[in-house]
Length: 269
Image 1 (cartoon, rainbow, N blue to C red):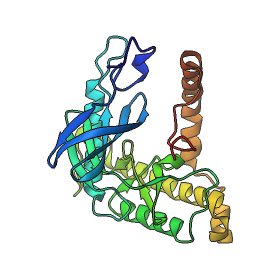
Image 2: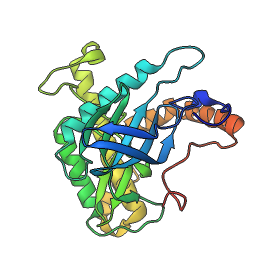
Image 3: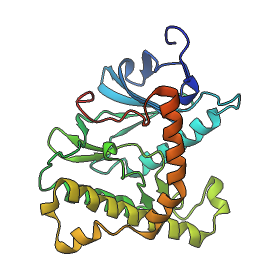
C-alpha cells in the first residue's frame, strides 16, 4: 500500500496498491526493481531474481464506482497469454514465462529501450520489424497497437522487439479454425475482414514509423503509402477520437496532466 490515501486511485489498475515487492516464480524469488507503467487497464513492473530480469504485467483488479472489474483483468490476461503462446518462438518477441496470480503474466525482460522520438536506427531495423509482423500475420494475428512508438523496443544490438499484446487480434482465437468466447457470436466473414483491416493498419504504421525515423529506407511507392491511411484507421479515429479527448480532459482535471506517462524520454532511459 502507498502511504496515506491516494487521490483518484480508481484510475489505476491496482487501485491504491503498488506492484508487489516480491514475487515467486519457478526459478525462485524475484524482487521489484521499478514500475514502468500503471494505468487504468494494467500495471507493468521490472523484477530481478535467480534467472535475471523479468517483466510482470498485472491486469485490472480495482473496482470502478463500486462495480467489480477483476473479470476484465482476467479476460485481458488470458487473451494476451494466448497471443504470447502463439508467437513465443518468433525472434523479436520476449520469451513468455507464464501466468502469475489471476490477472498477471510474466515474460523475459528485453535489455533495451522504447523507440525514441527522432531516434535514428540502423538500416535493418524496419525491415526486421516488417518481417516480424509478416510472420505474425501469417499466424492469423494483427498486432493492432503499433501506433504507439513505445511498444517498439530497440535492444542493445539495435534489433526491434514488440511487447504488449493486450489488444492484439487473433482470428480465430483458438487457432486451427476454432473460435472461442465471444468470437462465436461474430460471423466468420466479418472476423476475417476485421483481421485483414487490422493487419493493413499494422503495415501502414510500420511505414509511418520508418518515414519518421529512416525515410531514406523507403522506396517512392512506400513513401507514398506511408501517407495513405486505410479506411479502417480513418473510421477508428472518427469513432474513438471523441473518447480520447474526453479522457484527456478528465485526466487533466484530476491529475494535472492530459496523458498517461509514456515509456520514453530521458526519465525512462
